[in-house]
Each structure stands twice: as structure tokens, then as C-alpha cells.
Image 1 (tube, each protein chain N blue to C red):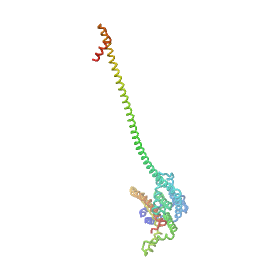
Image 2: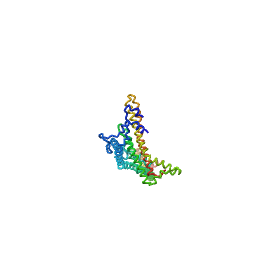
Image 3: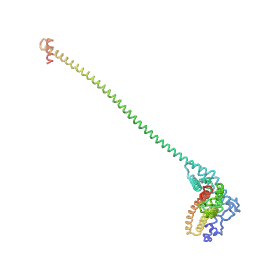
Image 4: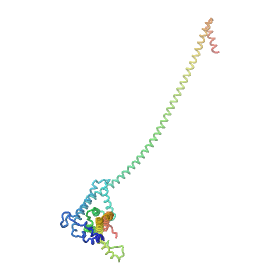
Amino acid sequence: MATEAHGEAGAAVGMPQLDFSTWPNQIFWLLVTLVVIYLVLSKIALPRIGAVLADRKSTITNDLAAAEELKQKAVEAEKAYNDALANARTEAAKIIAAAKAEIQKDLDAATAKADAEIAAKTAESEKSIAAIRDGAAAAVAEVARDTAAELVTALGGAADAKSVSAAVTARLKG
Amino acid sequence: MATEEGSGLQIHPMDQFVVKPLFGDGPIQWYTPTNVTLWMGIAVLAVIALLVLSTRRRAIVPSRGQSVAELFYGFVHKMVEDVAGHEGVKFFPYVMTLFMFVFLSNMLGLIPMSFTTTSHIAVTVVLAMLVFLTVTLVGLYRKGLGFLAMFWVTSAPLALRPVLAVIEVVSYFVRPVSHSVRLGGNLLAGHAVIKVFAGFAGAMGLASVVPIAAIVAMYGLEVLVAAVQAYVFTILTCVYLRDAVGEAHH
């Protein structure tokens, strides 16, 4: 088509494609070129690129598998963590309950002991207060007798110890 | 047609295709290093740079160059596997060789002042004949005479089969012709047209913006053509290979 048109039109220049004297040269160098390219490709380039592509494919597959495995592990770890957390919570609740019970027991014992001590102390105090009160009453009678005897003597009377004591005792009762 | 107008303008659109010796001016023997040698050598270097040097680190995370190499590998590998079938994968290095050579030669040919090896019928015919011979020999070797069954269209009515067989045989032998002329013709035409426009641009003074704009547009188209023709050449190779190695599908 275009080839022929140009071929005929360009008769002045001729058509180098149809100059058969150069064909052996072109064919020779073409065959050399093809053999060289074929050897370069089949011995070096293509095995290398094929290996790289296969490598990449297996790397990607392995990485995906590893990622899947890690994901699985993460899920498991999370589960274990949650389990541990739940266990710890139950344990903690148990410990808290036990501690509470113990504290309550101690508290009760201490309260009872304190109550008992307080009761004992109260009783003791009451006893000593009673003793003191009795002592005080006796001392008052003594003082009253002594004072009465002194007063009688001071007023010039003869103090008869017996009668003074009787009089004071009667007054104290009254 | 362009050259008729351009004859007064000294346009030589075909000069770029002339095969010249690299050294001296002697006759071209089969072994003479020529511009063909030079540009095929550059194509080989480009293949090495693109597919060997860029992948030398064998990185799991590829560099830019390695990505490109892997892109080419994946593209051609998938094409071979999809089109030629699973059995065709053992021809992958061969198909890859053809693709890289055609693609890089086409692209290198678009560099101004370069020489486009794939615009020569000699080159494309050899490439196509290699495919044709490979397909025929591999087909006969693997399938024996069963390979010839692909010319006998069993899905057609019996009366039509001999006629179809003749058509199939003719089309089979026309394959290398169409295979090679398609590639060579496309590149030849595109490069010649660009050269003609360039000739106009040199002769038209200020108005040469028009041909220059046309060259820019043509160049874009030619980049597309260079890639598409490499793709077409390769995928046709795979289609033909399927006849030789694939399951019976006629």
C-alpha cells in the first residue's frame, strides 16, 4: 500500500528495502542479534526476573500467612488477658470479702473485750467511789466529834468523850 | 505522491533507509559492519540495560528500572500463556526475544537520524520466516500428520471441506508474508511520511509551522504504531504457535 506507493514514486532514489545486495548483510546481523538477545534473555534476564517475581509472590504469601498467624496470636493473647483480668477480679473480690470478714471478726472481738474491760472498770470505779464515800462519811463524823469536843471544851464544859460522841452521832443521823 | 510534489524540493524520504558500511565506502559483504549492525547492536545494549542491568539487585521491592523489566516480562508472559496456551510457555524466551527486538528496534528507529532496522523487508521477512518455520516444524513434530488436520475443517459441510482446505492452505502460506509486510510496511510508511513533512518544513519558511505541527502529530502516531506493531507481531506469533502446540480447536 503505502510501501508500494513510495517505492514507485521514489524511483529516483530507489527503494533501499528492495536492494537485494544488502540482504545477506542484514540477515547475517539480524541472526547474530537474535541469537545474542535470545542467549541474554534465556540465560540471564528471564530466569532472574522469573525468580524475583516468584520470590516476591512467596514473600507476600508468607507475610500474609505470618500476619494471619500474628493476628490469631493477638486474639488469643487478648482472650488470655481478659481471662486473667476476670480471674484477678474474682480473686480480688474473694480476698476483699475474706478481709472484710476477718476485720469484722477482729472488730467484734475487740469490741467485746473493750466492753468487758469497760464493765470491769466501771464496777471497780463504783467500788472505789463507794469506799471513798464511806471513808468520807466516817471522816466527817470524826471531824464532827473532834470539833464538838473542842467546842465543848472551849465553852468551858467538861467534855465527856462518850456523851459527845453519842450526841454527834445522833445529830449526824438526824 | 509526496515525492512528486517534493521532487523540486530535494526531498529524499528513502535515504534514511539506505544500508551503508560503517567504515569506508566499500561494497557490502554479508559480514560488513553496517548501520544495520550499529543499530541492532544498540538494540542488544538496550535489551541488556532494560532487562539485565535494571534487575541486577533482584529487589523484592523493585526499583523503577526493575519495575519496567518486570512489566515487559509480565506482559509478554501473560500474552504467551493466554494466547498460545500453557504448552506455549516453553516458547516464552523465543517470543520475548522477538518482542524485545521488534519493540526496541521500532522505538530506537524513532530517534532522529537513527536507522530503523525493522523497516527493512529483509529483517521482517526473516523474523516472520523464523516464526513460520518454528510453527510448522514444531507442529509436525508434536502432532505428526495430525497437524495437517487443521486444514480440514470438520465443522463445515463435507462438500465444502476441500474448498476450505485449499483456502486454509493458501492462508497458512500467506501468513509469513502478511506477518512481515505488516511490520515493515507500517514503519517504512511512517518514517517516510515524517521525512517528507520535514522536507516541506525546510522549504516553506515561516509557513513551515504547519508541517512541523504535522510532524509532531505524526511522531506521536508513530510512537503508537511502533508499540502496536511490536504487540501485533508478537501476538500473531503466539496465535500461530497455538496451532503448533495447542489443543485442536479447528
